[in-house]
Image 1 (cartoon, one colour):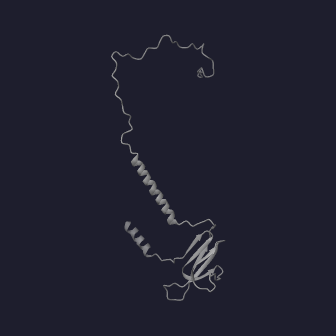
Image 2 (image 1 turned 180 degrees about the vertical axis):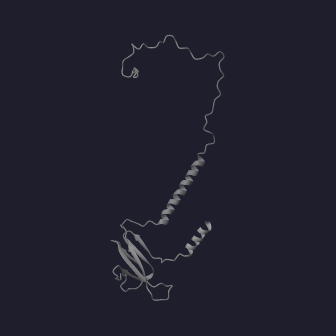
Image 3 (image 1 turned 135 degrees about the vertical axis):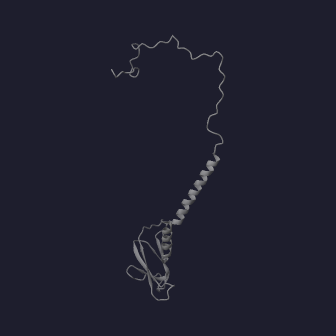
Amino acid sequence: MGVQAVFVVVLMFAATVKADSGGVTFSGKKVILTCPEKGVWYDSGGKSVSQSENTEKEKDYSFEYERQVKYSCKYTPETENSDKETPYHFYIKGRACESCFELDGFLFMMVISVDLTATSVLMIITYRCNKKKTSDAPTRTPKAPGKPGSRGPPVPSADYETLNPNTRSADTYSTVVNRMG
């Protein structure tokens, strides 16, 4: 089973295809589209939207985001010696505002990693500094030796008698009610 898993992983890495490296970047309401190579930019209707007057090839195209849009850039790959243009399509749908920014995944994971590391270090320092050197058991003092001729507890005095139930107070909580009979 292990050999098969290794074989599958090797095949997956061998069969990967290199994708073009275009991208989209949001910064507030500004959107920057990046074509894999220098090319001509078109909107969804096929109209050229090149930022310069002459339709020279550009790698980046920027605009203010207002609604979902489709753009494409057509470029000639430098690796090929043909004049065949390759289209690269962008479909932009999102929410943009003036105070928004794009959160980089690497930065987010780095913040979490640093936080976990710092918390672990503080826990270890606290544990090592507060480690007790003695046990929590209370120290026992030796008992004083018994007095010779000591007596047991005193006998109840005959001066005290039990109360007569007829003379007791009849307040609400002064008697125990026998509910069984």
